[in-house]
Amino acid sequence: MDYKTHEFYTNNRFLHIVPEELHMTLDEVNRLSLDEVVELSAHIIGPHNWSMGRKWLELNGRHYIMQRIFQNAGLDNMTVPEMVQELIDEKGKVSDEDILQKHPLLFDYMVHYYKNVEKYFRAYKMVRKYAHWKPRRKPLVLIYSELGKRFEELVGELLNETKIPYTKYNCGVRGCEPDFILSPSHWADAKLSEHTVFNSETMQKYEPHIEKLTIIYLRKTSQLEYRRMVSPKTELVHISYYMEGLSVERRSYYEEELRDIETKTIKYLR
Image (cartoon, rainbow, N blue to C red; front, side, top):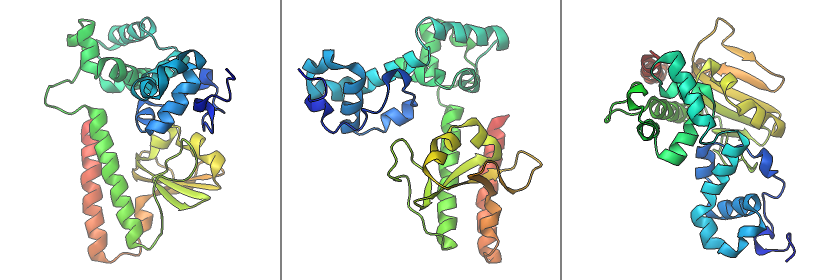
C-alpha cells in the first residue's frame, strides 16, 4: 500500500511535522479535535497501526502522541524517577513548582501516566516527600491558571470598553492561540507577571507569524519601564496604559479587580 495515498494521509495537516522533533504540552494535545488527533497520531505511529482503524486512533491517539513527545524530551520510567530523586535530595520535599522548574514536561508526564502528581508519589511510595498537598486544596498550578484566566477576561473587558476591537484564539495559524487577535499581523497575550513571557515559549511561537506581539501584564517584577520593547517585534505593556482614558469610577473598578488578582497571585508565591 502506498504510504502517502492511505486515507489517513489524504489532506493530513500534520505531514510537515517530523515525529522525532514533535514538542507540545499535555494541554495543547488535549485541546486537539478528534480529526486532529487521528491525523497527527496516524502520522506519528506510522503505517504498521493503520489496520486498527479510525476509532482506535480516536481512543488511543492522544496517548501515543504524548508518548512520542515524552520520548523526544528524554522522559521515561528511568529518567523521571531519577529527576524526582534529585529534587528530593536537594529540597527534601518536592512541590509542583519544583517539578515544573526541573523540566517543562515533567509535570505533564506525571499527570498523563498517573492522573496527578500525588498519585505518582504514592505509586513510588514517596507521598511524604510531596510538599504542600492537601486533599481538598487546589494545586497551585490550577490556582495560577484560574487567576490567569480571570486576568485575561478582565483585559478583554477593558479592551471592549476602550473600543479596541479583537477576536480570540482562532488566528488561523496551527499551534498558535493568542488571547487577543488585534489584527492579522498584531496579536496580544495577557500575562499575570512581567517576567512570565521570558519563561514561556510565547515569543518564539508567535513572532514568526506576525509583525507585532503585545504582552499585557499585571504584576511588575523589575525596575524597567512599564512599557518597553523586549525584541524587535514584542512589547511589554502594563495594563495601566489601557486605563488612562477611563472615568474615575471605571478606573476605580478595574484597579480594585486587578488589586485582588495581584494580591492572590503574590499570596500563593510565598
